[in-house]
Amino acid sequence: MRKLFDENFFLGSETAKELYHGYAKDMPIIDYHCHVSPYEIADDKQYGNITEVWLGGDHYKWRLMRWCGVDERYITGDAPDYEKFLAFASALPRAPGNPVYHWTHLELQRYFGCELALGPDTAEEIWNICNEKLKNGLTVREIIRRSNVDYLCTTDDPADDLAAHKRIFADDNIKTGVYPTFRPDKAFAVGKPGYPEYINRLSDAFGTQILSYDSLLDALASRLDYFADCGCLLSDHGLDSVTWSYEPADCESLFKRAVGGEILSAQESEAFQASMMLFLGKQYAKRGIIMQIHYAALRSVNPRMYKNIGPDTGFDSIDTPNCSRQLAAYLGALENDGMLPKTILYSLNPNDNSMLSCISGSFQETGIAGKVQHGSAWWFNDAKLGIRSQLTTLAEIGVLGGFIGMLTDSRSFLSYTRHEYFRRILCDLLGDWIEKGEFSSDMKLAGGIAADVSYNNAKRYLTRTSRYK
Image (cartoon, rainbow, N blue to C red; front, side):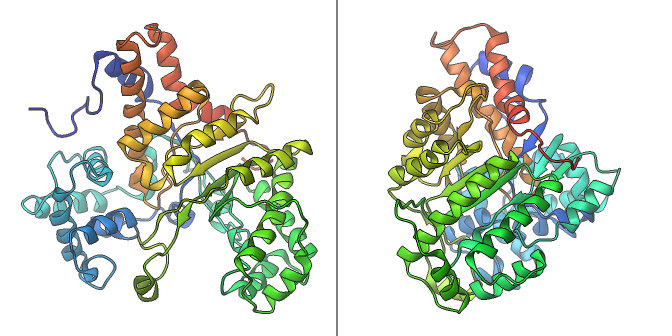
């Protein structure tokens, strides 16, 4: 019987082992999409206990605990941290095959030197081991250092002042690059409450009151310049679905109604979004900033829990929007004007994998390898089967060797082990093809692909275009 998560887990052949240990394992990490706090990096936060790290904001773990019938008091409620930890330790052994089980034990091994399996019988010992490490030097920056992170890209609102990023840049003790990502979702949200208040906040950052649709566009362009000067490499858009309209919307009227407190209809919101996306896509192209589009998340589906504890707490789902024509039309409009930026496309619905690989292949450009990317398996799909499926689809329809690889999409600094998780799956897949005679057995060639997808492709793709670091 093999040891839990030994050095060769997920690696089902000798070829896979050689690829992983010889080519992928020790590559640095570029985490080009995450939700960690730059303030915690600037402050070099020291956590009080393992519950803060594991359960403080991890909706993956929260969902798992709810599946096991754990009372909400021990998940997002006011129970003591040790009791929350014990509740998680009791739930986790019920979840074989769940990526949370894999990630939890990878984190225990890599950051705490603990090879025990977490469960009710080991919980107290693991609690003490982890808390001792956290107390004695395992701060946020030390986690990043141990993870061999070259640079990471946080997710930031256009109204943010990026003060933490500036502090990080000025601190010579921080060797990892930390760059903001421009995420203007709230500027689009004319169909949701709170839009007037957000426009006031954005106006304060812009320095001038935003009174019209044109001044909103001016404000976003100005803030994008500010982000670029602070090292921004990418933008990001979390959309319910990708929309497109060949008929121009009266955005001035829609904007005035929204800032007046009116909640616009879904159709009106989609028209507004389409116009904004066209404008911003061109702005990204002008500045060399990469555009990311995430869509097909059905958010906050449980109205009772949304009312009780709010959004982003583990009550989201996969949606099934049929937006292939709209996505193609949007990219085509930018391409037609010669203003299509580098773009990464993610759908939460795995049924879109083939479509995204096909659309990506229709918008490539001479001299830019993989200009439009089918992004990595996201959220509910970043488990063993989901990652393998995305890689296989991309390989069959596109070019796996040009893929820019994994990201954490996480709020936890311990989540860098997801890059290891991904690299093992990648090498196992390549190893399978080689063992079956479906790909060259030239290990230098195959190892080069493993190293490229693990790190090198992202390094080449995410070129810096600003003056800032």
